[in-house]
Image: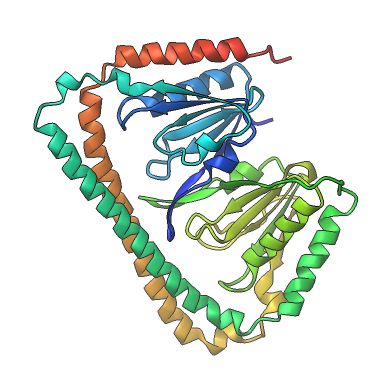
Length: 365
């Protein structure tokens, strides 16, 4: 078994900042919420606790930051059912019905005397610029989504909906027969990717590497890929089959992948910006364009679609550069707090957390 799984549970989307932490962290016994501004060592501590648990043979679920994908927003120690998360990103977590929530205040490591009197105003000013960069990025993503809707319309207008329904029903029958149970389940909602300052980024390959079967859905915008996944997800929940439901990092109302852990199967939208091709036994293609769209649709509207594609790409590029601007502005705030943080206090907080975890650990045998 892999020692870690990698996800996102927040995204910079066409519908603004979108959080899936409530679902991702549901059912844990304990959640440690690390509070304090950026630059006070939270992500570094989360990373080092993750590494330490993995070294001890524990499985760790890592939740990455969409602003800086090499940094962690949070982790779940799978066997312990314990979560550790940056309090600045964990919208919805306070409603964790199952277990205990413990706040750890990394703001205590800030030495406010090291923040010059004028710097507080500077920070406020930079925060305003940060909010503005994010707002512009979200508006631009939304404009891109509206253009994407125009693109989809050509295929929706030429689609055989009965055929699409038939594909969904056949798959439900084929995948779930013999695995149903009486009590319905609730899917776990996550992102496998994110819009980042460097463009689209995903963990599809690492999330599906150990599964026996992978179904790569091909097709065009509007050829029924997300609708198919929604039908499969709803049927799995109804039939009591465990399902991980992965939302699109650009449009969270759309679905991009389902993983069925007990069926050892994944089915996912394998088109740009996360286009992959079968490369091993157990991989197969399901082409929704070939199966459900009137032949010749691509050719009939080639010029119109090419123009839409160009407008869409330009807007996505613009939104990405606005995220890069947000990242640069965020780094300015971070630098001020880094300079005013007493890292010996951060290390002490890390030791406290580590000893809390050590008390919870049962020997892995």
